[in-house]
Amino acid sequence: MNTFPKIYEKIEQYTTIILHRHTSPDPDALGSQAGLARSLRLKFPDKRILCAGENDEGDLAWINTMDEVTEADYKGALVITTDTGNTARISNKLYSKGDFLIKIDHHPDVEPYADLSFVDDEAPAASQIVADFLFEENLPVTAEVAYPLYAGIVGDTGRFMYPETSEHTFNVVAKLTATGININEIARNISDVTFAQAKLQAEVLEYMKVDPSGAAYAILTREALEKLGVDSDQASCTVSTPGRIKDIIAWNVFVEKPDGTFRVHYRSKGPIINELAAQHDGGGHALASGANAKDMDEVKQIFAELVQVTKEYREKNE
Image (cartoon, rainbow, N blue to C red; front, side, top):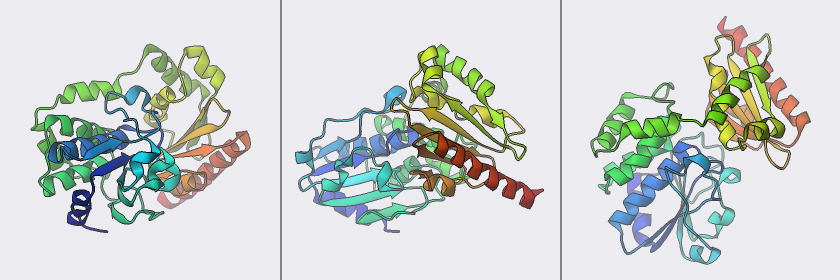
C-alpha cells in the first residue's frame, strides 16, 4: 500500500486529471469519484479535473454526472480510479490511455492493475478512504465535497449496518456533517423509490425461490420489468429486499438486461460470496458483490455455487 503523500505528489505533477469509477455505479462509486474531483477542482483551479464514465448513473445522478471526455483528453493525463477492484469493471475503457494510473479502493486487491495504489479492504467504503485522503492532505472539504462522500459512506455501509463500519467511520462522518450538508435529503434520496419500484420490491418476493440450505434467488425478466415500467438499472432497488427474511442466509437477484444477459447481485448474511462473483466477471465485498451471467445456464450454475457455499457455512456454524 502506498501512502497518501505519494498520491498527492502525483496529483501535483499533472495538469489534466481524469477520475473513473466502476460501471453500473452505486452511491460509493459516484460519491468517491465526485468528492475527490470537487476537492481537487477547489484546490487546483488551473487544472482540468474530469469525471469519466459511461453515463450510466441512472437514478443516482443526484450524486454526480459525468463530464464529456474524449480520447485526446488522456494524452499526458493522470487517471485515478475509485471503488473499482478490477479492470473489467472500470466504466469507460479509455482509462488505459492516460500517462499514469492510480487506484483508490476498498475491495480485495485481486487485480493490482495501477501504477500506484491505495487499497484498504477493511474500509467500509471508498468514499471513506477519499475523505481520509482529503483530510490528511489538507485538501478542501466543503459541503459540496462532503455531500457525495457522505452519500457514498451511507450507501456502502448499509446506513452504518454492515460489519466494516467502525468508530473511525463515525469520526469521518462527523467531520463531513459538520460542513452543513443536508443528511436528511441524502437519506431520502438513497431510500426513496418510485411506485413502480415499490411494486417490483413486492414482486421479487413472489419470484423468490428458497433452497433448504437458506440460499435463495429471484429472476427479474425483461417482461416483468417492462410490465411495471422499470428498467434494469432501477431494478437494483430489489436487491436488499430478501435480506429481511429470517430463513434466507444468502441470495442472488438476477436482472435480465436488454441484450438478454443478466446482471447478478450477490448478498449474504454470513457465507463469503465475493469469490463466487469473481468467477463470473464480477467481484466485490465478502457479503455484497456483483457479477454477470450470459444466459440461463450460467444463472443456474451461479445459484448452484451459492447453495454449496451456504451449505458449507451452515455446517460450520450450527
